[in-house]
Amino acid sequence: MPSHRILPPLACALLLAASVVLRSQPQAPSQPVSPGRWFKGNTHTHTVNSDGDSTPDEVVRWYREHGYQFLVLTDHNYLTSVEGLNALHGANDKFLVIAGEEVTTSAESKPVHVNGLAVESLVAPPKAATIAETLQQSVDGVRAANGIPHVNHPNFGWALTAEHLAQLERTRLFEVFNGHPQVNNVGGGGAPGLEEMWDRILTGGRLMFAIAVDDAHHFKRPGDPNASGPGRGWVFVRAPRLEARAIVEALDRGDFYASTGVELAEYDGTSSGITMKVRATTWSRYRMQFIGRGGRVLTEAEGPAASYTFKGDEGYVRAKVWESNGHVAWTQPVPVGASAPK
Ligand SMILES: [Zn+2]
Ligand SMILES: [Zn+2]
Image 1 (cartoon, protein in one colour):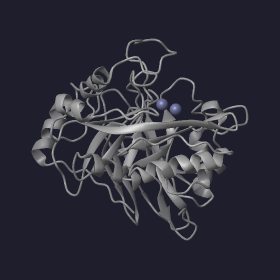
Image 2 (tube, rainbow, N blue to C red):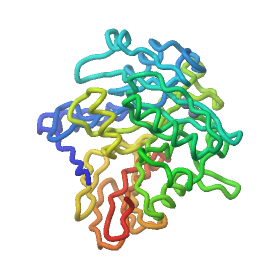
Image 3 (spheres, rainbow, N blue to C red):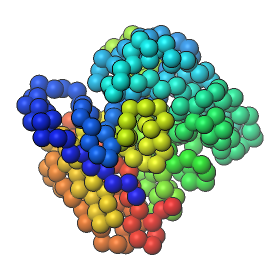
Image 4 (spheres, rainbow, N blue to C red):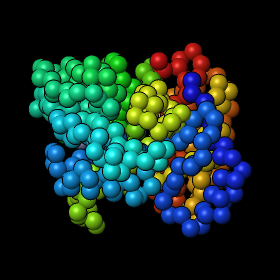
């Protein structure tokens, strides 16, 4: 299982402490730490190459100027070249654009969308009879193009169920949060929300990792509640370096956490337990939950730091941090004991 630890060198820690009052946007540590560093990125974004309202240059510029270290461009069934964008906006160790595609199709009159991160060629959207087959063929198409697949917005069009995700092979990644205003993240009308779906899948014995994304389409409609704007959901990925293959492989093995506005200063998930600490922002307060089988809250801690020692029969333990204005971070489940998800 991955062991995550962020321990910036002393000089960096002092700098961060001095600047914490001034910063409103969370930032990843800027100094290399062993064995990996944390990079903030968004893995789901559209441009005018599909149904976005802005050019790739404008879109990349937004993320570059808002504290991200990487961005994956994922237009519907279109592979935008990132070479020129990286020549213009990329900077060693600071910012990287990664090629991608949203493999977009439908089955049983429902939308089936799967992102391909770092695909090396365009993936044709499959046409199959069932949602399950279409989903699997999309995932396999992304793998064949040497990309990393993640399943998008399961509740969009009420298309995908926990069963669809649980039987899916060759990916463990799905979106637990998507910033688009019409994707039904929290469920309703008898359909589970995405986090509830996640716990059902884990409890059923299948290990999956949860991503948060923007699915940004609109950069020219600030303040419009119906717009799908940027800056709503992202991931912090722990990778040895800021390079496309290193970033997407870290995602693939679950070495990341998802966030809508909470940054962790420390996260350590080992075979004995989980220790974590929030990079607290002024005036915010925090509640930390450790969650196990069936979505049950095993323990809750009030404050910006907490730890949990495994008892051995939890099946899995994952952490969720609530910030007092509603922002959330989700860490990935650590398998525990004989009934651990695989
Ligand atoms: Zn989509
Ligand atoms: Zn999309």
